[in-house]
Length: 512
Ligand code: SIN
Image (cartoon, rainbow, N blue to C red; front, side, top):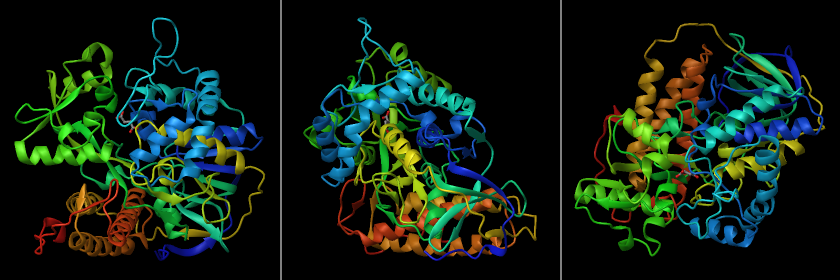
């Protein structure tokens, strides 16, 4: 990826922080906490204006622990990934999982995880887990973790949280990252840092239907890639098998199936046993493709929650159903973009290929998830890598090098420009970079996306609007997904390459 020509001048005016964290989900909060505990002054920048602007707040099922059996969790992670997860990265995760959960979530934040009648934690199970080992707060776990975490970091004397602020570009010099240019001034505001930690989350906004908040435009991945950082595994976009099939989709947690809910096709039949020996609890990629196939063949797929005390045990999900006017035990479901398993390539401390740039959480590729992530390991990975990276990022001094000064020569942005381009982008990803891919369609996606990025770059040369940068970021990341998908001809995990490719790829509105 070549660097975008956005800088018309440079400046060294700006402010400094020891550690700059970009993003306010569990990974960003953990990095900020660890750096502050280590004595660093931390600035946490976030586009968010409220907790549910971060994907963490949307996480339902829970956070996995090992319950004292790291080998068993490791085995499940590697099996779910189709054998592609990096065993060393998984070792790091499982070795630190229980201590990190206990230290930060239980002792520091006092998260009220659900308990059984005897007062012990009530562990639940999700697909492809061989044991009950997931801590949860009904099925709204992310909210119950993130809100106290945000309050805690906000109250911390060494951490400043700055909301409604976007990082637009990284400041780089000779292979080292020195901070970011934020959108606090119309021509960009430089913030210099000893180390910069990207924790900007996923890419849900690149797809028409996603379980992520709208803000998930892949900002950190795009900024890092444009600055020359390595990215990896970008083709592994995970689709959750059970999102609400109607308008305004939302997640129906795998914990529902873990506790007894079953999938049925349009003929009322349970079908998952025909696709995988683990049936309804098969790995997520397998279930997502099976649900799509059954929807095509029988008209619909429903999640039958009648074996559960659904409304009583899962009030937050039941409320979402009611909000959309749905009452009943057979909830229509369809796959929906959920999580990017790849991202900015990092090591076991969250270090990227660029000096003093770290990445944690969904924007990072640690190797833990390989080609398909096991349920309830994303909060855990964000927590463990956030802590490791935050600690490693301390001890460097901020240096005010020349920063790109962004151009705001033309303050007008045609009102519908970003919305129209986003529509073209999501049509392209939905159609060509979804659950099932075909080499010709991937090539078509690349050409549509290249044109789109060119149009956006032309605007960015004279304007600094945040939504323009989000669109630039989304188009960069979509191109990275297309490129990775085209380079990987093997079907594995979330990346499924159709073998019976139709010779003539139909024209689509995305080409207009
Ligand atoms: C779910 O609750 O099904 C999602 C959990 C996850 O993505 O890890």
